Length: 135
Image (cartoon, rainbow, N blue to C red; front, side, top):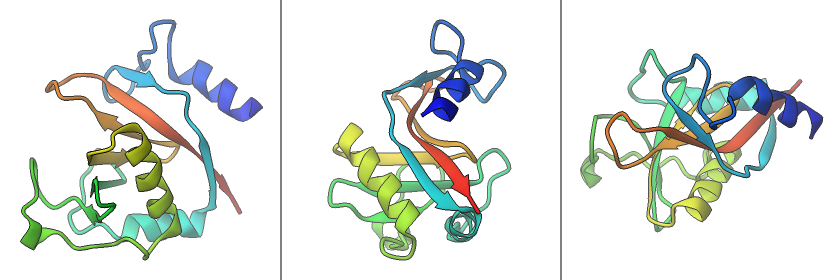
């Protein structure tokens, strides 16, 4: 818990905006998932299309299906490659995300947290789960 509080202080200023990161960011009262570097690397390997700005990006829907990022905007069903069950970490992240946004959507994985973007283009990111990696 102390690690999470210290991290929050470094992550955000008084207005819950990130200092020097991707864009403004809000932080929800978020759980912390603990997993190994090997599990994190496996999660990253599930990506079909790499992006320079995020280690991994996934989407989920209200049914709990999970698929990796392949294009901007809505992903047609025939382009979705189901990955639920291949990584307990991504399954847990998606399940937590669905408690925050029941319809699902796209979420972004960083080394230390997962977040989602609001409806407004260029709007703030919202962190919904923190990560703690152990050996």
